[in-house]
Structures are given as C-alpha cells and as structure tokens.
Image 1 (cartoon, rainbow, N blue to C red):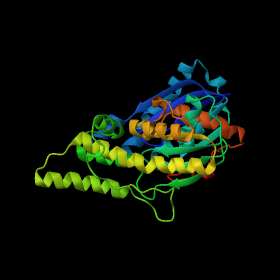
Image 2 (image 1 turned 90 degrees about the vertical axis):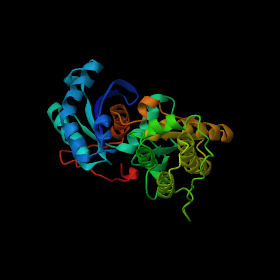
Image 3 (image 1 turned 30 degrees about the vertical axis):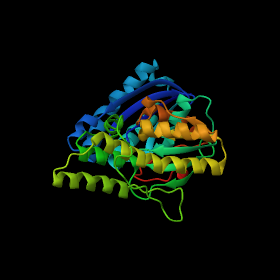
Length: 336
C-alpha cells in the first residue's frame, strides 16, 4: 500500500511516500528555519504562507523520487493535529484535495503519533506495547503505546515543553534558532555541575513535569550576570541546563517503564536528538534491562515519512477522514 503523506504542523513542509508502513520510498522536507531565525522563533503567518508556496512542489517531488505515478497512490495521509492552526490547515486542505482528485482514502494522523512511528522506520523489529518519551518544541509527554493506535498519556509537562525551553535559552544566549542543536554543541565539554539549576516535581503526580521554573532560573542567571558585568561559563551553563532537563525526563520515563513492565522504551520528537538525553537513557536502560529504541537523527525532526508510517496503522484500524476534516491546534493523543 503506497501512502502519500504530508506534514505541515509548524515550520517544515514535508511530503513522503511510504509503503506498507515501514518502507520509505521518498521523504522530502522544505525547512523555514533560516527565515524564522531572525525573529527568534516561528511566526505563524509566515509559516502558513511558506507552506502554501511549497506543498504542491513537494508532493510532485515525493512521487518522482519514489518512482511512482499519481495512479499508484493508494491513500493520502496528513497531520491534522496538534500544531499551528494556520500551518495545519494548509496541509489538511491540500491533502483533502489530493485524496479527492485521486479518488483514494484520506487518513488523518496525530502529529505526536507520527513522531512515535518514526521508531518503526528506524527499528523494523519494534512493535507495541512500549513506553515512549515524546519530547519536542510543543510536546513533552510519557506515552503508553499499547497498540499501534491505542495510546494514553502517563505523564506530561504542566507548562513549557522541553524543546521550547531549549529554544528560549538558546535565544537569550544568542546562539541561534532553533536552539536544540546549538545548545547540544555548546554543552559538549562543559561542566554539567557548573551551575545549580532546579529540578521541579509536581506534587501528587510523580510522572508529570514542569520546565517553566528551570527556564526562568537560566534567564535570571543570564540577566543578572549581564547587569553585573560578569562573564558566564557558556559551555558549563549549556551542560548544566541539559543535565537538568535530562534529570527531569529520564527518571520519570524509567519509572513508567518499571510500572508497566513492557521491557521496551522508545523516544520520539526533535529533542530526541539531544546527545545528553540519549546517553542518559542508554545508561538507564542498560541498568534496568529495558530495550531502548532511539529514532535515527534524520527522523527526530518533523518529516512526512513518520506520518506515512503511522497512517498505515491508522488505515488498518479503520480511521478515515472526509472532506469535512478540520485541523486542531490541540488534540489528545488518545483521541487519535
């Protein structure tokens, strides 16, 4: 089954062709990162306009690279939630038009479910059930992946997402946007104990997280140093920040894995590329005996292949979208 898939939830326009859920025939992405970097973050109106400009050409490119004609497409899939509403609507409306024109089923896909599915591409042997730590610019959650389409959130951030914090800290340090890769590079060789940064706990919800206090602590530290004319150890600060984020994420993920007893832990989302978090999870899973599944670095960010992969399993479960399919800025992963 050949699925033509689209992703436009934020600032990457992506299209891909995926066969039978696990074989990626093509995967093309048009990034807007350089354009948004001058603003220090994504400007929704600009993102939507750039999606409009890119999506049709990417659809043709995905089919050409896959070596397929339009008549060989068996279904069209699209991210419909969550994300920037204007950006999502571009992908949803294009996908509806494509499905209608090709007379094939339309499959709506939850963005975070797509990130989880990126692991099926990297690890063909991975099957549910497993625990998945989903960490990106908009989502930070520990998910119980019971089946390919039955999922539940076990714990989540109460405020900021981990990826958002990386972006905001990188911006105040003046090292660029998006912040994940520059922060990771800066942290290498830094002393992760150089600055004492907070690790928050949510009373009565041991698997929930909070990052707003950590972000505020770093911003205050930087501003205070600037006011006093004091130099900061930037590699040490980046390393200390990464350690605080990882110390928040990893123990909770491993506790969820212990409680459920699946023996498998996966990671998904853009922040899954962070070297400190990956290393800490590798050590934790080696100690616990759980199998660890990390997505390829090329599949951590937003892409169409992950949407096409998850769409296959949504299709098998009977999920379809009509011409009345709408986009949603927020949507629980359990709702699909």
